[in-house]
Image 1 (cartoon, one colour):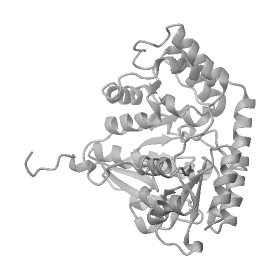
Image 2 (image 1 turned 120 degrees about the vertical axis):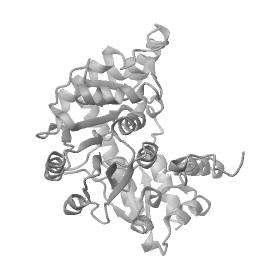
Image 3 (image 1 turned 90 degrees about the horizontal axis):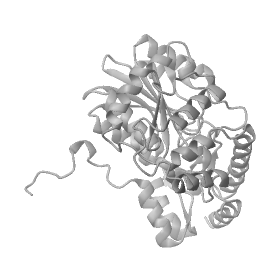
Length: 387
């Protein structure tokens, strides 16, 4: 094969994701997996039954329409109006994708040219870096720093150059749990308008906000609807992460651009599950309220346990992750810590350093998820006391 590397140089150094590595480590050691963010219980039974009915009735077993089935596109539009006061045409302004991850990939591949700069908050979800690289663009990190993990908006302004094409926003933010305030979003929107920037916003945790935090879609702000690609999915809200049903809402020209790239990725996916998710999006308010309350209780259970075990735990405003600092335990390197943790006490976590370009900013930070059964969290807390 010669001396030329097989892997495209844009993806050099990325390799196997940290989630795959740590989940495999959990299986090999029989550890409790508080690393990868998937629930250990399924979502509402009636929604699972809706998927089964669709399969048995022959709905979606063959290729669904490229943009997604009309029922789901209509339900997504209704959801955006119901929860956020945003009006979208289900025929021209909604696109169904194979989860939010494909939506992000399709958006970045469609909207970026080689050499374009993308400003994103770090730590960033790992697919952001890969998708920006595959598009031939350049990622420019704005670092969220402990203990507050708030964006420095003066720094954001300074990072914008004539080559900046797009802002990649994630709120509620994985892994820090930060939820951008209305004021922060207003400033970001003003910068986007001033510099004529596109915005791609990942809002998959939109229904998982706690306390006084409120999720505000940036697309609702003045001048933003026509320049914003909003992305969400069913996996986190309804605890069916394996179904991989996501969606994009945006102005027609943006949806058309994203669809052009998306059709050459999966083309279509999750046919029967699309019918079930359409029903899920129409569940009553009580479902969303109870779901949030359950996760809040789990958050506090794990938060208290991590603190008691000696971690410095930062209280998240949203998502289902808690970021911790391991230096109070006499540790410095999160990657080494996470690789040794299963043998030390039978728990798996994720080192935040893999989500940073500035490795020092996240070196001692470790992420735990709390989307698990209460008894699993309680056992994990007991095991972590061994530290």
